Length: 420
Ligand SMILES: *Cc1c(COP(=O)(O)O)cnc(C)c1O
Image 1 (tube, rainbow, N blue to C red):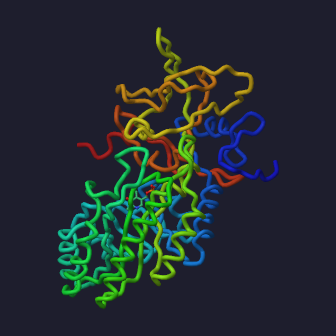
Image 2: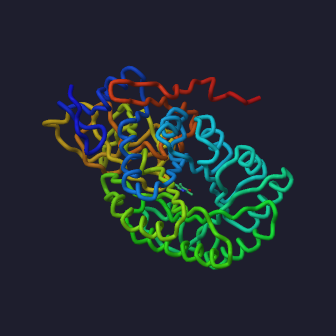
Image 3: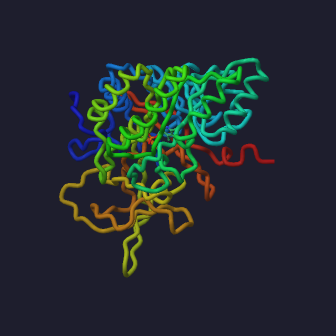
């Protein structure tokens, strides 16, 4: 089979959805279901897209580990030169275990504990993106105690409202818990200057997730660059500007953010500032490279509805029920000539909120058939749980003609490990 030029991963070839050279049905047969499948070639092309678009300013691509923290995936991203944006000590552990250098790691999050701060200082991370005065005081205390200097940037809440598909994924407006109001950021830097253990080196903003428009990024960047230039005027030159992540992808319902168009706006402004650009894409690198393969257990019909009951549900993929995440779902095998039906795609978990899609029109699924749920490479496995005593699924990474198991399916013993 020759190289297929892809506009999106998991193309349908001769009736069958493929990942690399593998029919999804073969992967399901070999590794079982439910199964997370990731297309590494696609992820490489996404990293290249960001690199090329922003090449003039040679950005640090700090991949947002919370999107998908699988070690093998992180190792591949590390090999591609990516750094990491982390939100916890656990993600720091993952990033370092995968070989990502400390100096390419930025640490965000409103609730950093003393332990986590200490761990981050030990690993020599590039910077803390600080979300409050109390946090900065705590970082100062821990750094002082250890006799080291902590590098940080303030995560500014720019007061920018970005349109996101769900209110839970907007983070850049003033009534969210994130960041420091931009009017107060300057005071934090001034206070830090008087502390021996703090080194103010950057400024950071992250306005939400699955953002399809360029304007909020420009507004947020403009705001933080103003703070940076004021600071520089006061003799506090910064080193980096971090514009966060949230770059929207095409999920079949919302159009993707145009990364080239975004770069055309961002690059000149960053060049003018002379600062090192940090990008924190999560979803945009990995979401559409992932599919969840799941089998139809039962088809159950009542007077009003057709329920297609899968062997996976909210325990494996919580996005639909948690914040209305939209995912295309299609049979992995042939669909030609099949008749569409309107169905609810639901899981085995004992919750009415356990669904992937409600009232979805698709070729009428049959019991035993394999379905593929798209755009689950981000916030899929990482949000999976053991609720209802479910064992988290296996994950495989496909690189053209090669497939690797990168996480084994959990066993019943895994479920009770650690319990006394
Ligand atoms: C979640 C998060 C990201 C990544 O968001 P995506 O929508 O996956 O790109 C980046 N930066 C911070 C601070 C985050 O919390």
